[in-house]
Length: 281
Image 1: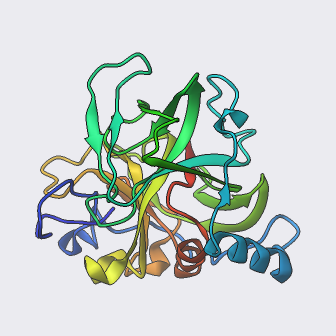
Image 2: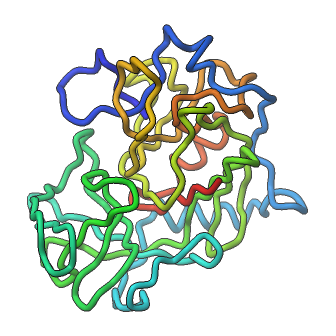
């Protein structure tokens, strides 16, 4: 994702492709651009899509009972539909631990390092404790917060993003139904895109960090553990654009997923921060 070595302000840096590498390591990917296509029978109806956009931009549906999640339910790729999200209220902090029984407590504020409201996807529940996907924990490790904390505002969304690395395909789904598909670029051999369940942490304009990120950036809660030798940038994963759309469809990035403009703009409009992102090989 964004923030290259020259980014200002310090803090956690994201896995961005540097312009100097745009024709080699960053070469984005080989293949043809595929603007969002619909489900196998064509695009979702305009009415259905407008309803989705309106529901999201108008605010998330309130989550009345966080115990809608079954105890320990990881909501895997095959059956995840509506997902719970918890947001840290403005001016508040919440204690996050490495496990529901304690350990390694740290404080999370109401804003991310990029200024976005802190919203986290709920992956598991154990009693009053919620296991959340967060950039503050390693890939595959959850942070645990007290679901009864007054500092948290619960909500839910039926939207999810699913990325199939072998098919080079991104899908935007609502309640399990495919709304749009797009061909994407993925990590190259040796720096493959990590798999697992992540979540969107920030939605950023690409020109804030450089034209080589295209129009838009969806920062993810994951990191790239297999950076190329000598890589000078950060390690955060992201779904973002590319200055070379004709390269979409290959496997040459440093780990980020590159998507076409139409896909990114749609997700920027409709997908709330905290939305789960499932990546499989």
